[in-house]
Length: 216
Image (cartoon, rainbow, N blue to C red; front, side, top):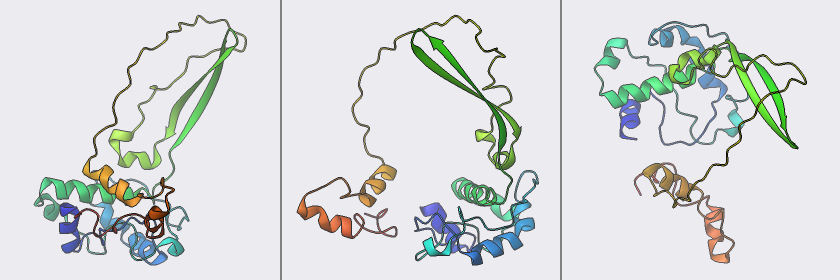
């Protein structure tokens, strides 16, 4: 929050205390108009053909006070970004790539499904082979390696040998809260309660607001 707040005060990112996942047409238009400048901040240029607003991202009716966190019209230079602390650089890079993914082409792949019968049980195997990485080019860590999920070539009715094992596991205690999960718990407080005294939490949508939960 401190890092994104600093980028907001530098006028490079929009208002950070928002949980909105949508933009208005106005924000989309200025993003589209500045695509060339944003592209200069990427390691390599890539096609950004989706210049028509999609309701999945652009819906003014679902924007209440502030839109989703995006870049502003003020585009920093690579040299300016290089002078920032590491965390601020990482946050800006994440917002940049996530926003530009809205303009990138779709991730395309071929999918193969194999149903294998073992006794009376049916097992489903799904394999994917990328054709066009599309928006995934922006996120190297999420890219699908060629052949990673490729299935073998089989024919209907072919006999195969199945190796079945029964895993043995132990139950684990609930994970301790983190700052992130605490904020989520505050936001959803009251949704699982039926008591009359919990009704106020449902009316106000949890404890606090996007602007105050982190401080609390």
